[in-house]
Amino acid sequence: MTERTSRTVLLRGGAVYSPADPFATAMLVEGGHIAWVGSDGAAEAYTGTADEIVELDGALVTPAFVDAHVHATATGLALTGLDLTGSPSLAAALAAVTAFVEGEEPGGVLIGHGWDETGWPEGRPPTLAELDEAARGAALYLSRTDVHSALATTALRTLTEGLAGRPGHDAEGPLTKDAHHAVRRTALAHLTPEQRRQAQRATLTRAAELGIGALHECAGPEISSEADLTALLALAAEGDGPEVFGYWGELGGIETARRLGAVGAGGDLFVDGALGSRTACLHAPYTDAEHTGTAYLTAEQVADHVADCTGAGLQAGFHAIGDAAVAAVIEGVRAAGERVGADRVRALRHRVEHAEALDDKAIAAFAELGLTASVQPAFDAAWGGPEGMYVQRLGAERAAGLNPYAALLRAGVPLAFGSDAPVTPLDPWGTVRAAAFHRTLEHRISVRAAFTAHTRGGWRAIGRDQDGVLVPGAVANYAIWAADELVVQAPDSRVAGWSTDPRSGTPGLPDLTPGRELPVCLRTVVRGRTVHQR
Image (cartoon, rainbow, N blue to C red):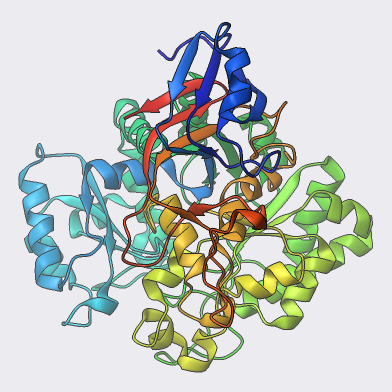
C-alpha cells in the first residue's frame, strides 16, 4: 500500500517547473495538495514541521503526465506477452510467434500485438498457412500495430461464429472491419479475470514508472468490454497507481457510460479506421489501393450522438483519422449545435481522437465548435517522413499535411497528448520530443507547448482546468526527474533553438534534441501518494 496522504513533504534543492515562480527550487506538499512553491532559502521555515524532506540534488520536479488515450488491458498484454513491435522482418515475426507459443501452456487463446508489414523486406503480412505453422496450431489473435486489423489463426477463426460472412473477412490474410472486431471479442472473452488484472496492473505500474499520473482509458463494445472497464476502474480506485478516467465509445451509450462510471460517451467511437490498415476514411483513394477506406458512422449519426450527450451534460467523442471521417464529425457536431445550441455544444469540449488529416478549414471548424484534439505525436515519429507509412498510403503531398499541431495551436484548439498504447508505447517524454521535432517542420511546436499538452492538456480535456500545474492549492500530482541541463527549446530554426538566460523568466525543461537521453523518473506522486520510487 502507499503511504497515508496527511503527511507534509518538503522538496528542496532542485528545479520546480511552476508558473507561480519560474526560479523555484523547493515545494511544500501538505496531504494531497501543494501548499507552497519557492526558494530553498524560504523553505527553511518549513523544515521543522515537515514529516519528510526530499533532497532533490538538482533533480527536476514537474506536473505528472496525463496520457489522454490508452487501452490498458491490451497494453499490459503487450508488455507481458507477445509484442512484435520493431520486428525487422516477416521471418523474425514468425520466429517470435513460435517462441512465444512454445513457452505457453497448451489450450486457451493467445494474444499478441504489434506487427507492421510496411517496414519488412518481404513487404507483406504472413499467410494463414504461415501463421498456423508458426503458432503450432494454437488459437492466436495478433493485432496489427494500429489495432485496426489483425491476424487470426485457423483455430481462432473456428471459435468465432459467423466469421466468414462478416464485412472485412479474408480467408487467407488480415481481418478488418466487423470480422476483426469479431475475432477480437472471441480472444478477449477467453481472458480470465486474473489475466486481465495482471495485464491492467502491468500497464498502471509501467505508467507510474514513466511519471504518468493519470490515464484516459478509451473503452467500448468494439474494442474491449463493460467488464474490462469496470475491472480497470476498480483497480485504479485502490489508489496504488495512476488515476484512470474511462470513456465508453458506444453510439447512444449515455446510460451505459454513466452506469460504468465513465467521464464521457466517446473515446474510440469509430467514425473510421486507421491509415496503416487502409480503413481510415478519405475523400480521395489511397495511393496504394483503389478505395477510400471505411466509414463506420455518418454525419447524421454523429449529430444525434452529440445532441443526446449535450442534452445529458456528458462529453461526447469520436475516433476520426481520415479527412472524410473528420469532415463527418465536423458536419455532425455543427448540426448538433443547430439543434441544441452551439454554446451548449462548445461548453462540453467534445473530443476527436487522433484527428490526423486536417486542413485549414477543418482546423478552423475545430476552434469554432470548441472541439478538443486528442492526438498522438508518436504516430508521426513512427510513420512520418519521406520513407514512412504515411507516404506509402497517401503520397508525399497528403502525408505532409498530417498531424498539424502548430496550426491547431495557432487556431486556439486545445491539445491533449496520448500514446494510444499499445499502438505506440507509453513514453511521455518521447511524445513531447515527437511533437517538438515533428518530421514536417511546419507542424513543430515548442517543447513547452508540447509538455503542456501532455500534462495540463489532459486535465482540461476532462474539464479539470485547475489541474496539471504546480501552484499552491493544486492537487499534488507530480514527478521527480533526473535530467541534464534545462533549456527552453523552440521549434523554429530561424530563432535560437534554446536559451538558458535566466532573464527570460521562462522555466526550463530537459533538452529533448533527438539522440539525447530522455529524463529518468525518480518518483511519481498522485494526490500526495507515492506510486513509484526508483
